Length: 266
Image (cartoon, rainbow, N blue to C red):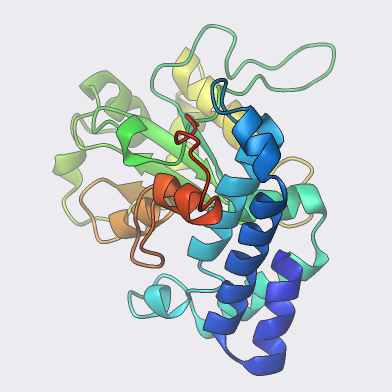
């Protein structure tokens, strides 16, 4: 569905046509599955239909179809947007799926096993993924979002001083003022403090999110309250965004018009 929308952009140079194609296809699929949806009214939608819904909504809000909202703020260039559409056409389905529904993880309250590398398999235990909604974000937290081609490392304004010291070498985020935190600086700080369990786990998680990808995923550090904060918020696809006015519940209602099913919890 997403690649067909991509083709419409190249053929018509019309983003709205591409977005309507995604919207119409989502309605068609959900309409065909209306009997299934109604049968699950009490127990909630099966996982595959839930994933379809959030992925379709995420694709409508994705910067690939909404690049004008990003270019004006200086986050990406027109060439980079063209590159992302090329990535969509050439990536595996699994990698492309992350572009439309990114993975969000909390890093400030890791369980003992999370972020640890298994000695036998070499795999890193990742923390559970979070829903893409502001209701799960705390200004006392640190989060990393993997959108398939970039890692967004978000630091809240009220993270505990001990953790800020490990990450940035200061006691509060506010001490940095308008200074941008580069990938090199953050990774160097984490490496220098790798004897700290949290720092070591965060390094392992960053490495794991970059593993087995056909392209390198740069790390963009975002301070809560900075201009780049709006970029992070734009990926909270289950909320209303500037790129598409419906939240998840409203999109679900639109795609299943006529169904009396309660909004599914996701």
